[in-house]
Image (cartoon, rainbow, N blue to C red; front, side, top):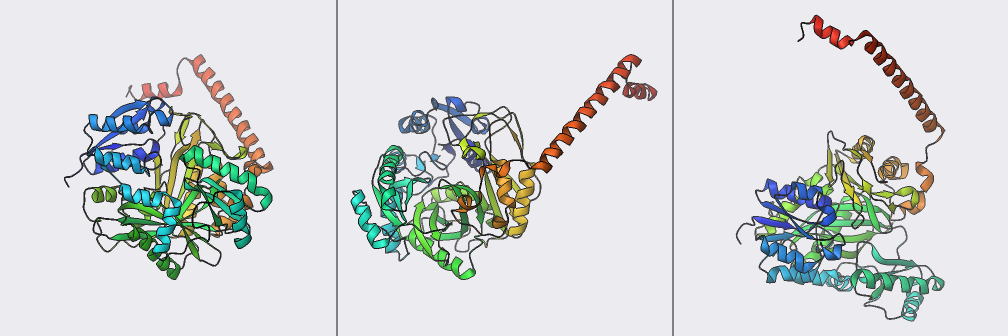
Amino acid sequence: MPRLQRVLIANRGEIAVRILRTLRETGRTSIAIFSEPDRTALHVLMADEAYPVGPGPSHESYLNMERVLETAKRVRADAIHPGYGFFAENEAFARACAQAGIVFIGPSPETIAALGDKLAARKAALAAGVPVVPGSPGPVDSREDVKRFAKEMGYPLMLKAAAGGGGKGMRVVRSDAELATAWDLTRGEARAAFGDERVFVERFIERPRHVEAQILGDATGRVAFLGERECSVQRRHQKLLEETPCPAFDDATRRAFGEAAGRVAKQVGYRSAGTVEFILDEQRRFYFLEVNTRLQVEHPVTEMVTGLDLVAEQLRVAEGDELSFGDAPPEPRGWSMEARIIAEDPARNFLPSVGVIERVRFPQGPGVRNDSGIYRGYEVPVFYDSLLSKLVVWGGDREQARRRLARALDEFVLEGPHHNLAFQAWLALHPEFAAGNLSTQFLEEHWRPDALKPGPEATNAALLAAALHERSERQRVQIGRREDARGASAWKWMNRQRGGR
């Protein structure tokens, strides 16, 4: 296959910026698309070319398949990179790209179809000899079916949308009394989000860890395991902080985990970057959950410990080349953490926020990376995901990475919409997080909205700072008045003494 020269990025925000940086480094033309509210977005300003695709609502712009493909053909794009979200795991879009003669940078439509449905993915895992969470073999048709499974497996159970993803279409049921409401809500959410109301049942594992395997596959049938990522700190099934490696893994667990992920991927002939997701119980037994057939939000932590550029690897595979490292993937080195900086208010149940970025200062220094799509004056739109930036750090070990994350969060300045910087700082300094004692129930067990309220010491410090500022302002005004009366400032006098130099 000839080299891909013109790549359209069918996405927005920080992931579009991240992809176009690799395109520029590899000498390719980056083509952005944008909705009307995103006309001055960072990915539009940075791309080599940029084209409008419609108004603000996603279904009229970024999710308008006909318009995106028509734009790609009109501007002579060789390929489309979908990023994550939008069309990233859409079998129909990947198939339409192929029919239009445009390379879809990701797995084949057949692979997306085989793994996009959670029930089909469970069957693939079972065929590969990988343990899955006990549950129904197929969709359940009624609440009575769920009750029958409850008698066999016992409560609590998890209702899950067969076509779900992104934490949507999932509810824990702990009794018959909770079932009616949970059933209706889960099916309704699945229908609204995915156009598919099929639901299946799994046993709910209490206090699990959410751990995922980063994989890369090429056309030779090679599948590489690039280490695991711990993603247990979540709210409403949405990840907030990720790290690699997993603090709970020993060498034997990691080896078995990587082998299991590889078997699932090879079962479906996986190519490109992907993630095999598992949950880990308190006895370190892991169970298959699903496969995300795309680049993950948290992929930078893997890049930090391996030194790889996963987007560059995706481009190689899309061009028909082998993985850059052949049969010897790089050994991960050190530890990395990623904090998602989100426009939301943790004190109000993480309510999303919008507004103009009035001031921003990104942290810098050793081992710090920022993947962001914002700048001063940028207006956070109401139509899209509220992720603003991803703060990624690297350290020689977990404690250095954690301390570096805390330092970088302290340096991060962001004014305008509500955001979760203070929450992430609370998390990085929490003793249970520092000890690596994590589960998907971490926030339920430890977080309280008043945790960020300043105590008496902080209040006194703020009052002292205000008093000092007021005193400094009075002194500045008094000095200015004296200089005006004298007709020249001390600086001007010194300049004259030096001959006007």
